[in-house]
Length: 400
Image (cartoon, rainbow, N blue to C red; front, side):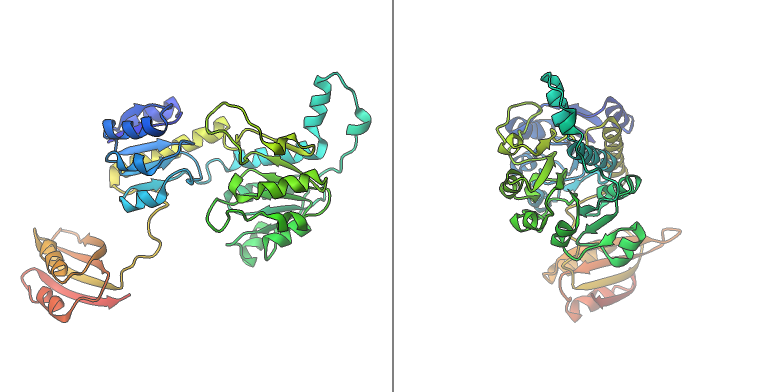
């Protein structure tokens, strides 16, 4: 199996893939047209990326069967094209959760104690203890979480250590789960905005979360509260955020923002960072040695499991619900051509097989095939399969 790695990847991870029998092409600087060309010329089976965008042209230019995003999100990959071409897309969820939570809490402390301004003035030769002695502190203040996935849960444990009560909203959060995590559940993200002293965003970028944090959200936030976004820039209305910061109502720290350069270095002209009350970092939430090692290990696991079994863990573009309407269960003798004959009859009726599974019993004399069909087969097709008594033991048809 040939693996094209188009982003930086640890030596240990590459060595592990080679030890598993993979052929490695390591080109961490490839982007856009050059990457599309490399996908074709290398005939790679697997593509590994971190921040690099994977476009339709890249997916269509070779024989890829798996793309691994060495990170949690996968919004940089053309999921629709991958699904249309039968290319698995897998990610590494949760492996950077601790790193992101650590950075988010670092920003919370930096905002509360104005660490950036402290350092700026010291570097400029200014001493202003009188001004910077003013801080509210975190103990007893309410942390509001938008999103309670793995990163959100890491935030909860850290908030407890700081003596901060936690309120949270997530589309999947239930009362029982909230009680288990010892957080107070809110019915909407706007309720969190109106009840928290510190708001931290930890939702994935999806159609339903794009622009979720809008003007109405910032209008609901308490005066003097803190806002942290270490998730995705597209989740918030940045213009609305800028208005809230400019007004002095809130202070904000961003690890992600709209004008973020695509490469590792560059220049920015983001208005938000020109405002007093806004600080930021360079999209480094997942960028600790610990997190990158965990992600590399998970990437290796995904690829080696795929090589061994043909099934990739953590796939994100498999249909959640099959369009199949009927299940045909065929108990048959484990012989050459038996299922081929069954599939020929199904095809002749113009019926599509959505999924299939064949389970072989001890001794390899008999097996059961479970065949998911997109429509009910006519009685004559069922009977034609059933009457092959030399190969078919029994069959049943179940409406799904």
